[in-house]
Image 1 (cartoon, rainbow, N blue to C red):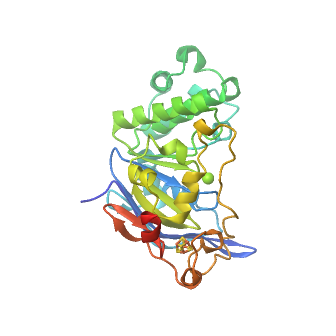
Image 2 (cartoon, rainbow, N blue to C red):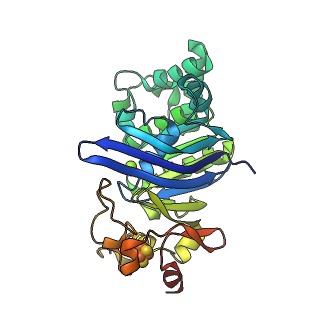
Length: 326
Ligand code: SF4
Ligand code: MG
């Protein structure tokens, strides 16, 4: 059947002074109503660029999308004209960012900023938009919303600012909510509260949610499925329980072993050695081979495709069977 959102063979390039950076190299995934997909990877893996492509905010001149489709309810967002996008996409796909302080405008009261979206996109009058801003601030559990609707972003804590950004993101009843590292800047207690809020809102509105993170620990209780990205490709995709039970790709295995363990306080995390590649010079064969403990000759020449390795599960590794049997 038709998915809420379907990303089909997406490619994104950035034309830089150093050459062409292959930021996204053929990414496929789908998202259904009420489903949470976590996109996991280090910085430079292409997870944020994927989100920006969906949002239509890759419009900078050096970004090129040579091929691919992004279907929202069957309609390709990439070929829609800007006006259609604003009408169709704007209200249906929203995004929240890591850094609420820079996403909010410092010179306007928060309630005004929430209200402005409602006036622009819903044609609400000033007084209705104001009431709705208060209601949204209450919904995201901001204490004293009626008074604080007139406060400025800097007068809120980081966690409260993140709630305000969430209020703005849900103001237009999106069907898809993209959260890019929504809790990275927050302390652990606040992180958990924000994740719980996002889940409750998702349940209420049956939204599809894409949760972008570098931290496998954040997604364990929240995601249904995980797509692990490396150098602009999905290298593993599976249900969250299956990934935790047994990673099917050496990179995922490394990420799992990097999760801080509460029961082993102070223990140094076994991070994956080395760095992600420069995207203007992606290694041939498997892009992960310079960092992979399992790499063989074939890995340096032949690129592994994302293939079925179990029910509802794919991995892009010549030796995924060995990893799964390990
Ligand atoms: Fe490692 Fe080779 Fe698998 Fe790539 S294809 S992840 S280098 S074993
Ligand atoms: Mg990012």
